[in-house]
Image (cartoon, rainbow, N blue to C red; front, side, top):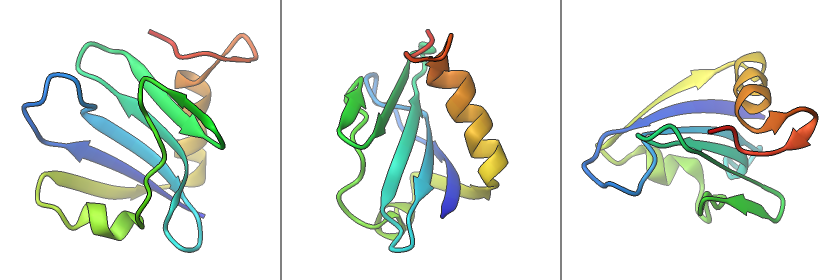
Length: 97
């Protein structure tokens, strides 16, 4: 697995500013966190999608090549901290606002 933290530079009101993804060996997303300007958090894994944060349908490299994305690799531990802080709350899967 690989873990990526992406800043998305754009002016869209309803799109995430930060995307944090876990990628499989083919560089497809297996888990994703999206953080919005207003502090809302969307996420996706398996067949769960919150706030339209679906998993990508193309390998990550195709997305990362676009100039409005600024990706950097993070560790598994860093990803898990984001996942636990933003997705799990009181041992339940809930987006924290």
